[in-house]
Image (cartoon, rainbow, N blue to C red; front, side, top):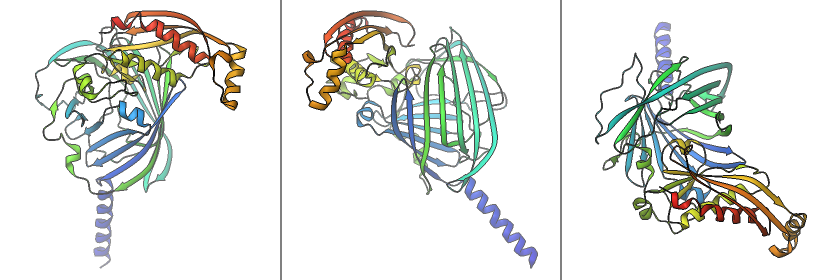
Length: 422
């Protein structure tokens, strides 16, 4: 009798462990992205079923939400590929996992004809450190991990020369089965509609899938530009519910594309409107990424000025988007990039006092708050965000505050570069 009870208990324990490993999950997370004194908050929804995982992001700022396309990312570990789906345009992009010696890629023929071009070299270094710390989170055992990655690409690589580091530190859990053969995301070259580029990937270190981060931070640094951005993750809710497999498959009637640019085009609206509509975006092949400002940015309101620049570019009849991270540029979704360097900005004492006095009294008459001056360089880059196509320099002095002077200088410098847009 005792043996039977022990056997029953063992079977019950096995079934409990199996149901935990292969249960369906739904997560709701808060994501905060910070770079160059700007920050954006969004909510992330994640669905997990067996060896598949679907992720969708939604910005809490409605202006940014209107600008960004609705992209769902699906990790199909059983097929060893990632999907990106744009529901607005009914398009999808397939990115197979990189080949390894022990796990060659399955032979899958794309539905559209493509050519593959050989690029350069990508040196990828990966280290995962388990601190040994454990804690219970949402009924699951979470491990505290530190994951470091360094990617160096050669000048002749698909995305050009770069050197990026990424450090993830936080609490991770396994929601996908540990034997799901799921790989981490690796760098990919940019492609056109008819060409895909493949670099020679040299891996250093043992690649291990860390699982799902429930709480922690990711710090990314462009070591060539000395740019740094941070992403903070906080899980708000984790629940179990039976999910439909259709969430993790290509929707019926959607068409395949072969580049990020094709996937993203036609479904984005301008953050400020600017007279642009989705139909305009489909026919207008010009697309510009508005980069973060550089130089003497401590004395200006960079978010407002980037929106002002976006509005000016939209008025020129060109679709544009305010990037939220450097990954937006390296994705290849834009034909051009515009960057602004604040060389110098001065605000008179009267302007400073007037600005403060105006907040109290409601008096914002520019003629009564002194003068300000600014010198800027506006640069137009090619798709890679590095090759300079044109630049305009302007120095302006106006009655008003520092931001007013920067706006006037931007207006003058833009005239010199807008005709060069591709």
